[in-house]
Length: 128
Image (cartoon, rainbow, N blue to C red):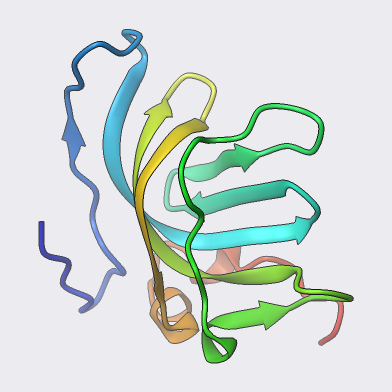
């Protein structure tokens, strides 16, 4: 599937999945990948906030996106912060939980900032 980053950051396609719970679907989702503290992460897109991981709780299987220095906005001590990403994931649409990450690609921060559907959903940065 090719992604075209003009106007909107990306669109997602829902594909029926085999051998998954009825509420799980594989989707392409693009938006803000927010990692504000240890083991807490979410993907914030046009449909809301999708839980990737909760400290001491559930965590999606698969690798998180890897960001270069220019693709990552630090929000405090350590490496915590946020960036822009597109991910192919299995989700539970009822709970907005990401269950498995099949692929995850970092994008320039400017891609999310220019996407009208999510530019106002940029995570809070206490360092600004």
